[in-house]
Structure formats: C-alpha cells, structure tokens
Length: 199
Ligand code: VGL
Ligand code: ZN
Image 1 (cartoon, protein in one colour):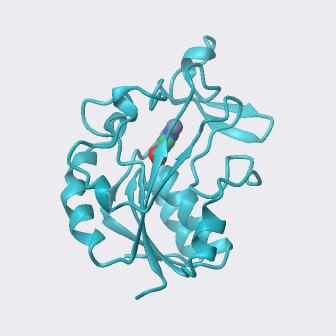
Image 2: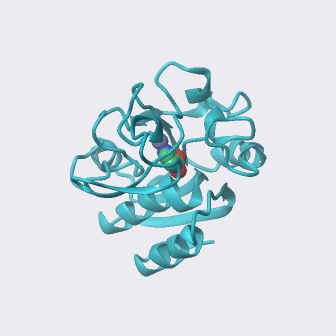
C-alpha cells in the first residue's frame, strides 16, 4: 500500500530489560518489527528524548514517589524514573533495531515542562511534533503502530492519529506494556473507542 507507514514507537534501551524504565519483554519485539519494515513504503521511528531534570522525572519532585501521579498545568502526569536523557546510552535505539530503514526519526519529550507520550502532540494535546504534516505531505493515510509502551506512547499516538483522521492499526504482538494500575486495559478500551484497529 503506497499510502501506508509503519510507525515504530520508542524502541530504546531504557524501555528494554536492563533500562531505566524497563518494559517487560521490550526487547522481544525487535526482530518482528525489523521483519515488518519491508512491508511498508515509509518507516518512521520515534525517540523519547528528555533533557536532564525533565519535569516528568520523579527525581525533581522529592515529595513524590516514582510512578505516582501529579497535577501539571496541562493535566495529570505520571512521575517516571529518569529515562531517555538526550545523548545517553539509554536513549539510543535497541542495538538490533534496523534503523537504516527509517525515513524519519521524530524526537519528542524535549520540552522541559511538558511530557510527550504521543508522536503527534505533547501532553498538552495541542503542541504538535510536526509528524502529522510530514505524513500528510507524503500522502500517507494508513498507519500501523508497534513499539513501547502499549499503554503510554503507543496508545497516545494511536488515539491522536485516529482523531486526526488516519486509519490506524496497532499490532499488539509487536508492542509491550508498562501496565500501571490497569493502564493497559484502559488503553485498549480507549484505542478501540477511538476507532483504532487493535490486532
Ligand atoms: C514512555 C513513559 C515515559 C513510552 C515514555 O514510551 O511509553 N512511557 N516516557
Ligand atoms: Zn519519557
């Protein structure tokens, strides 16, 4: 399909076993993602890319525990362990991910005051990353999403893409979840409710 793209979300060392925000089995999806790339005329990778001291890091909120919630001006925010710091080994793609096939790498989460789960908008749901314009100007209308983590960055990206009018499929066999307090179940329901095909 000439109008389709594979969007590979955050397959980075910090989200794989041994990483700062390790997702169970995060490394198990890499080979399958590489194999899928040849089915798509366009491949986009996203890279979580935070400055040191990012406002989503629990380390900057000594009164709060990692994985607890706080209220930010743009809404509720999970406080994460420090992860994917710009230029660090943890922010690099998994060594086995075939990055040569990527047409575009979208970095996100670089604004110190706003987290960005979605590949399309920061967590204020209005500041764009530019990905929508890139895809539209290439005539791409159908997206398949894979990567980490199912319930955060994949979920937010898929729902935003569907709201923007793209036809969206999430291949959950090529995703892995963090699953905080039922977040995976909520994400599945939210994606399906937004019209995402969750395979
Ligand atoms: C992610 C939490 C914090 C993700 C990124 O890629 O799902 N989750 N930053
Ligand atoms: Zn992050």
